[in-house]
Length: 293
Image (cartoon, rainbow, N blue to C red):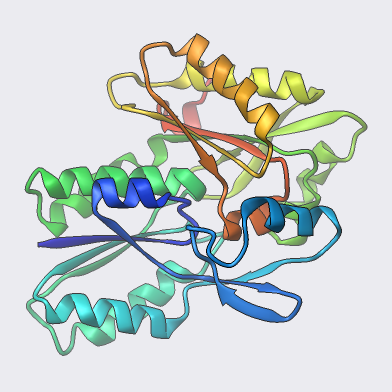
């Protein structure tokens, strides 16, 4: 049996995790000097409470997956005689994949017949989650850990992420976007469109005037780059932006009427970096180096 893991950056809801048989490793948020698990089920606070804190000026920081979390979770799986495929947040955004690899190397000394693969997803949020879902589908079809690793690494640059934010300030403070690109979010009324590049960096690729135009742009970019043969569902995530996400959902459904749409919140780890009111769309499509923009 192969166990599929992701982490708090994946933003997979409980519904999706249970549907596909995916587990996740906990990162932590730090709010007012208090560290607490970054639960994707919002057990410590509601999304509105979380994002209202940020709106009020509260700085929320985060941690990667602690080494002991890897040891505890992986050891339990290995003792059950199962293999592990962990699909982690893009390495430019988190050191969790490397920590997982180091932990796996030590654990496998005691379990030489087992396999642990820690895969850099080159994505975050539901881009990472989308790959975990696909890995679970591969597992459920009977593939072993080696095959799953190979196939996930082959498609990870075909996850298309299109994001808009009110400002790049939160991303810049968190070191999650290149500072040389900060001007995209500093012009009055101008909204950046951000992708995840081939190495997993958040890169602003264009700017549009106004929030409504940025929503239109997300829908158009998704539709123009979508691979309908690979995309079983389009995923929309938002940082407590209910009215705008409904408009985005409407436009996506108009442009891609034959593909289901699933809408959920941006979780606490990504949310702490991207800030309130962000909108994001994820699907399988063009290789990120060949996007039609």
